[in-house]
Image (cartoon, rainbow, N blue to C red; front, side, top):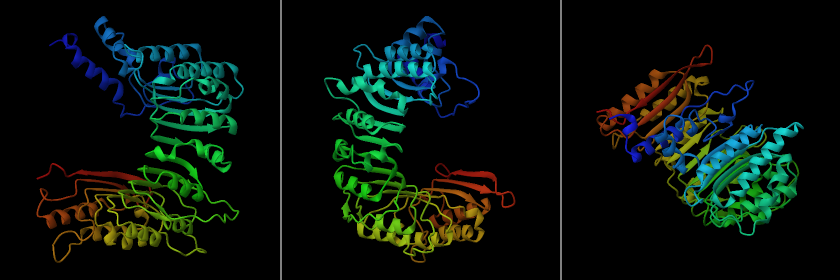
Length: 455
């Protein structure tokens, strides 16, 4: 069959994959300006564009234009000309659908203007066009500088609140607090809102207590912060203990001044996933975990682990194990990394981790050859009673960011295969290990094993 004779339904599926399968990253040269066609795309890394489909033949053009889903995910960045504005307007028009109500997923990222009037004005036109479609917003992501504030003012006076917005992501730079208050208030007016992600600028609004009460914490299921103080962390959890399911924090910030406000204990009944990238000290980790009860916790991500602090000896690991024990949760996914690798093995041997199905170790094991061998040996050790692996008997995915020997990884796999009596019964399904050259300390090769289909 000729490709031009494909049924419309099949052609539509091909078009959808063409636009929305974007696994390859686009290489952008910062010294070379992007064409207006590529400043408006479906994703930041898109290598395909639905406009391309309209230039083949009349059938393809009509089919592509009639599919709002090809145009309803819009990533606008580096807006610098009227041509960019026209392209954005074209996408909005084609994304509306036959009833003009097809939901929009918008990402708008602003370059710093440095006083250049034309780019700011064109960017403002894009914002105005986006605001005119506010009743179609399903998810919106904004990365903005202060000179964009005036263009959002029409949003604050719309007669009806946003009705379809389910999630937003905002990152502010040089915005005043009053502007932040109005924009976040408008975004939070949606009764459908369930997911929010705040950049670094939001931290200032919490310090001033300006927007805390306008965010519907008791309706959110997913919350992400760039930075947060522990007192705000606990306060937000207290306001969302019956709804919040996923929480991610890049960094907990502890100010120099003493905060005498007592931090209460909090029970998060539905929290399943918690990610905290960085603690200032182990003492701070202890203070944070010591106030939580997480019976539904299934995923825990600590990619930077617990930093060393010679003056404050209370262990972050002790507080973590205490949290898991009193919560009586069945942790299934765990990510951990720091420079004190030896204590990692002893703590992972705890029965509190026996339900793990996925483990990622971001610690630099390649710099600790003995620890690397010990960890793989521990993963190989069998229980005398059951002849099954003693450590993580349910483990399906193992990711080691750096090891010194690929052979040791393969030996561990062989041992676990033997313990289960063959690949057919083996629980382990996927292994990825970055093998580091000990001489150059550079990646030597990546060992990737998919054991799912082996007999």
